Length: 334
Ligand code: SAM
Ligand code: SF4
Ligand code: SF4
Image (cartoon, rainbow, N blue to C red; front, side):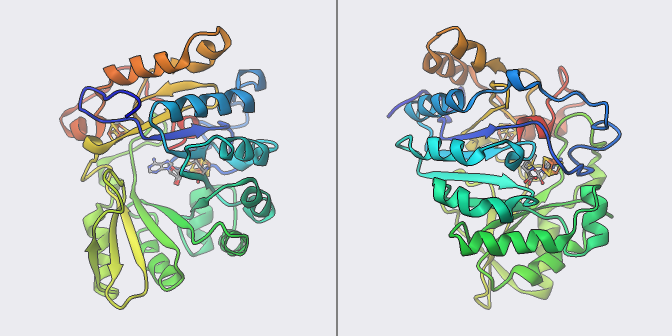
């Protein structure tokens, strides 16, 4: 077996790679306008990893045990010629699952090219089925219908069925739980309800704003009875439930109330090539510098992974403050 285990015997299996820190949405829980306003300085172009560098990193990560790669951002479809990157990654042997997470604003026009380039699936983020709620959350007035149309196009070109990520916030979009369950049951798409997380430093997170996954499941169960389903594979972050009437399944990602650090096999690389071993990290290591100075990147990754002892979500409750400033979700990519 390739690669090393970390301090808690966790292997490196998944890689999330952010291709841009920019986004055309200003989701209030991720890139609030007050912080990511017109004066916000994004990464300059020459700081971004090139496609060749990303592909080289993917190859090295695969040699260290990674077999799942997710492209994310910011909004990954804003990165120019993203299809070329997808094709290059798809050509690296050993990636069994190549996916991309998107707000779907550009998906309808990009889906065919992405499928052709070798993308396996997409995950689409959608927080409500009604425009007033969705537009308040994306904060740029983007309509629900365009996202739904993009999902249809994705299916037509073979990128479906899709996973639909919905972040649930108390008193903001709790009603979306039933709306989304109702719309997507029977379609083959799987909605995954995500507990609002305290990622970064800017979204004003409070524990009171979190709707626990157990409550989300109770809400669905009361309208459409569900039963738990075993995980697809060890370490799957979403807990799965299927509708008892055979109309498909839903998932919940209980990162706050039921943390899953024990099975976390995920590394994250930012658009400028910083490697983070936890979503809540405040410091990382520049793989871009390692690449550009000719250092053996595989050795760097092994060394960092061997020392890894992150389990932020499991110790969150006992923690009163964090050391350093945590990185933002739009930077690290979720
Ligand atoms: N822009 C793309 C999108 O929204 O799908 C990809 C990047 S986005 C950072 C990845 C995922 O993180 C999205 O599904 C988003 O809803 C989720 N996310 C962002 N901030 C979050 C938070 N504070 N808590 C939980 N999920 C969050
Ligand atoms: Fe952009 Fe995605 Fe963050 Fe929303 S969640 S602001 S779409 S990066
Ligand atoms: Fe993994 Fe860190 Fe999330 Fe725990 S808190 S599951 S270690 S990313």
